[in-house]
Amino acid sequence: KKKSKKFSARTKDIEDTMKEPLVLDLPELDPKTIPGMLAPAGLCNTAEACSFMRDRCRGHHLWKRHMKEQWDRAIREAAF
Image (cartoon, rainbow, N blue to C red; front, side, top):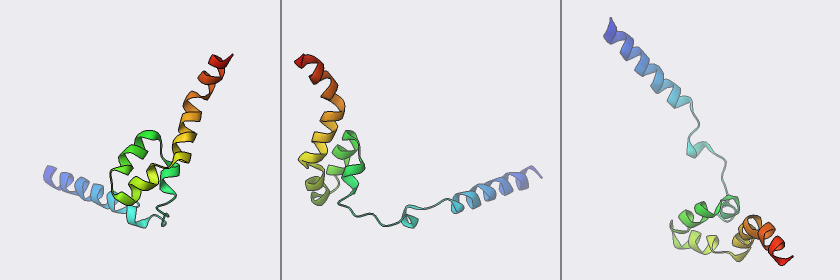
């Protein structure tokens, strides 16, 4: 009977996994909007995916926002 319990537990795990949403079930995202949602490390990783994403992830506006979030306070304090 131990084998049947293990089998039923594994079957339940598989059934639970099948109920989880898949990446393909997610609503479509415009690839142009993805870089704007990423942290700096994510931008670097995504830039390595393909030339299209590399061009998108190098956008000055994306990095300017991250620089401002990270260093704005320190630069302001140093200026005074």
